[in-house]
Image (cartoon, rainbow, N blue to C red; front, side, top):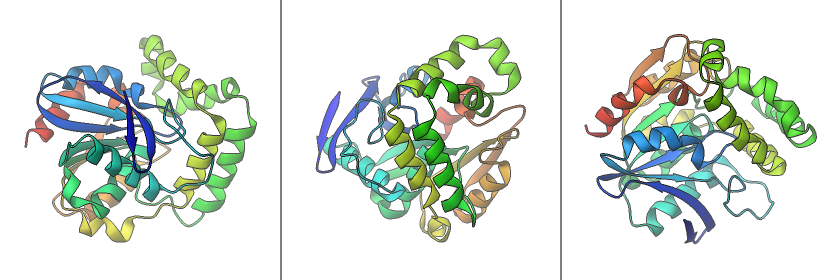
Length: 259
């Protein structure tokens, strides 16, 4: 469904009609439908909402630059437009950065969080590194980026055993606007919510794959140390899109959301 907000019009995938509201925030250069398998699993106990970030999927974008704080404000606008708050939030990669910014700025809207394969800050060289990534995202044909992305997203074993799921995610990636992908890269280069982690009051579970070289477990550990009362779980033989690679974790997410 298209949700009009004060920040623009956003496409939101909804799964389930009963239970407490849960918002799923997708990774860089994907879209809300990336969550479809997990959303279907969680829909028995939740109304699951998976918005497309600005410029991704079917959400509007004016073509201008934006920050992770802007993405958090977009999410807040969606939650308020649908009268959902407070909600449970699951964010993976870029979605995790957005979730942290949202929980720090609008604690009234976030009840519990799951942060997967993400970071509070990409380090001292982040601006330059992500600017380079932005150039590659915008100037390299999308199909030619897939070899790198598949290996980054999923472990070799998962790629061999679940090629249909890998290709499902790849199809979403290829359909993403290269300009929006590049703009989101610049946004990630600017993110640093480290000093705000202590302000987060949402009950938080932090998850990372032990083979994730995009946001290594050390970054997850820093988040868990910074958010009061949070818990950390490292997943063996798992890469960057851990919540898609490890459906055995979905019951633990439902249990965390249930308190």
